[in-house]
Image 1 (cartoon, rainbow, N blue to C red):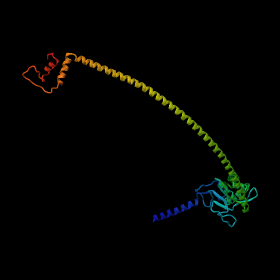
Image 2: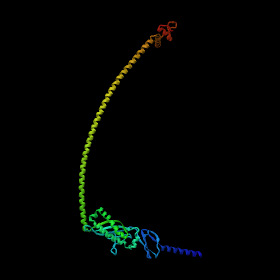
Image 3: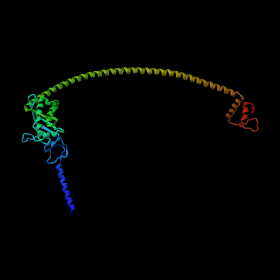
Image 4: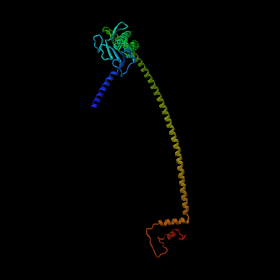
Amino acid sequence: MKSIKLFIGLFVLAILTVLLCSGLTIKINPGEIGVRANAWGSGVEETDFKPGLHLGVVGVHKWHRLDRRSHFLTFSGTDSHQSGRGMFVVGAENSQRRPPLDIRTKDNNTAAIDVTVTYRIIEGEANLLVAEGLQTSYRDRVVSTVQSVLREELAQLSPEDFVQTETRLARATDTMPVLREALRKFHIMPDRLMIRAVRFPQTYERKLQDRQLKQQLALLEKSKQRVEEALAKTGKIEKVTEADVKELVATWDKRLQEAQSDNNVKVAQVLGESNEYDLRERSTADAEYEVLVADGNLAVTKAEALRDELKNEALDTIGGRILQARDAAENLSFQSVTLNSNDPDIPSVIDIDALVRLLVGTGGDQ
């Protein structure tokens, strides 16, 4: 029983805690700026609260939420719908659309311009915006201020200036400081100014198009003239270049022929000198060869003569005669041999020494 009562008590305490916390805090979402005011007379606090949970006592504090994101203010005749108050309905909380901006150019012509201006609340000044009571009307104040500034600043452009991109961008850049100064009193900072389109009355549009066409045709004629001048200049350069090329080719051909002739002369001179050298050296070598051959033949003849002389001297001795007799005996050939063993005076052909003595005429012991 006690546990049930304890559970019920804790449950009731939790509910009271949640209710108490929800009554003491407030949540500022991403993309919002929180501004807190005291309902008991101290007024708006000089602080911009960032996204998150902040102290907010019910009945004591009053909170204002402002858009932290960039705001888009577009003056255009496309994708917009008319509201009951003659204004264009906001497509999103940070987007506003209005009819095209009608201006009168410096040449007293009317024009409808599509323009987009991006702006945001100045950091840290949202509390001033609330303190001045502009939290619900600052968007309309921005619209009227931007219209007034743009009608004054863009009126300095002529129709031809709107066509020139650089001139149009320069005018938009010069207009931004004026916009910043005009919107600062509403604690608003403009970021970008984009001139998206410009339209003139139909009759003037035709005249303007005809004028632009004539200007384009004039520019085209000037371009054609510059092209012809460039072609003429290029043709002259081509002719000069061709002449220079021909002159260089002729000069180098002449140098090449001269170099080739000089080389041929040098080659012929070298060949003549080499032939002369060959004949001279070959004649000298042939002469030396003949002398050496003659000297060799003479030496061979002298050696053969000396050999014969020495051989004759050697054969003229007793030993030489014996050698000759022995050779003769060895080379002696008989057709037939009659042997008579009874006659001791007949030498035997088998006895070489006896045969030598017979041929030489001396005894066998000499």
